Length: 246
Image 1 (cartoon, one colour):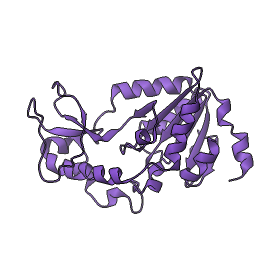
Image 2 (cartoon, rainbow, N blue to C red):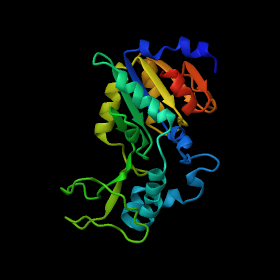
Image 3 (cartoon, rainbow, N blue to C red):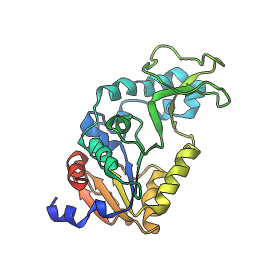
């Protein structure tokens, strides 16, 4: 990557920046991506245990799948890509905005210090009651429940990780915050994402249609190419972002 590319893309010249991150940003922290060769989903039956149906019918299997990610992500540390985003956000003044949307459930962005963060798929480290009418509050939970199914202390229904399971809708509040950010963003940067998971796959198109400059930071180009990206910066995010955001 030449210095000219970074000079031509002066991130600080934009007023409302929206960043979308995917699993690729956490690979340098020691976490495997879900998809692709060597990904976590090669090792488990996600189609069976990763769904809202599994929560109802096979909750222990669901917990064995998702709960196993808790110790893995706890052992990981935010890498320079996470840290660069948090440090850049801290420099943004009141008349500008910086919104970080992540598809990741590993909690590394918040540990790095990101504040205006939208975890659209939730956070694996939080548990909540599966009964939506229950008053039990979601809480940070270190347990990973590989032997027994946890129950709500109030209503005795199954506790669940506070993440979006397959066949579930994204939380309305997260989507509303995302739409608001995209509606006024003048720079959109996608980092380490396959661009295949909806609705996040549509975010670049929305941003482009509303006049934003659009940038992809990824190890390799999308195949087929996504026509909504103006610029591709190819390489490890942990190397590119410290330069791009410095």
